[in-house]
Image (tube, rainbow, N blue to C red):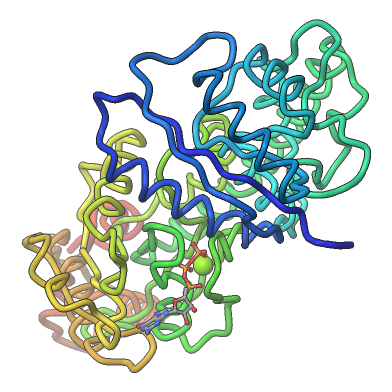
Length: 413
Ligand SMILES: Nc1nc2c(ncn2[C@@H]2O[C@H](COP(=O)(O)OP(=O)(O)OP(=O)(O)O)[C@@H](O)[C@H]2O)c(=O)[nH]1
Ligand SMILES: [Mg+2]
């Protein structure tokens, strides 16, 4: 199938920053490429206020229409949310499919979704996204007959469904996801019962989270120079000198103007990060928009209520860093690394160890001679600061996290 040809339109208010508008639009170009399309033209418009009927002014729409005809474009993508009325009117005037930024992101997610859970989440997000757009019987651009950007979905699509059936489907999918979530929670509980220290990699899409996971755990998780390479969370074990075993989770990346429906649908995936002891916020030193990326992630961190967690700022791609990026943002707990070359990885591991140790309390434990094997289990997942063996058993002082204190409370000396 030939590539979808898209005309992109950045729309914002005159009172908003033009730089942000351009940055976001540039990112939308990358999203279109990732979704498998090509860009046939780019327009921008800053308006005094948005038109409820068509979002932007008629002059600009005329120009876009002309460009659609000249380039034989298949679709127009607006870098702004659209109401159902706005989409319908624009599609009528332009006579091609009109999508917004969310729909492009959802389309990429639909192409990426591998696991059962991932597919359920994307289907749910697409339905939640589509519902408020439905005007009367009109289904918007999803009703395009041919495939292409905006028409893909992993499961049953919203294509020919009416509102009532969509509501029903949404309920069914939510129930299925609830089962998946419970499953995940059980797995996590098992892990937590063994109270292994846990980390979660978070950050902007393409920052290098998966590459870092591979570097830290000698794994082979999919990493690629494209947006949203990772969708399903992966958890791997790693060894930290001074502590022992720990686990680290890699998950979906963030992007500015992430559709809220998507966040809602990906709750189960995000819970993996919510449960981690420590967050590693991965930042791309080679990005021209480093500050905006950091801000997007930090806003989401507070939206998810993660700000109470210890966060280590991992500035990645040191080998390809832009000159002044290294000095741009100053977080107290920061480390500069290259997941690609391995530079700074030892410092990062040391920092991860220190962060875990900072969460611990010294506890005196005693293992009688029959329970000595338990002491060896313990010594694999925490720091033992003192140990005395006698014929009756082993006494030790261990540095334990809160979770570990409850797990090992039966051995208090
Ligand atoms: N030069 C350089 N490139 C890197 C480094 N780390 C990762 N990359 C590249 O950056 C791109 C994105 O890496 P990923 O690890 O897939 O990024 P991610 O954060 O997992 O991205 P998503 O899963 O899409 O959110 C890949 O092409 C990597 O090879 C680094 O230290 N230096
Ligand atoms: Mg990834």
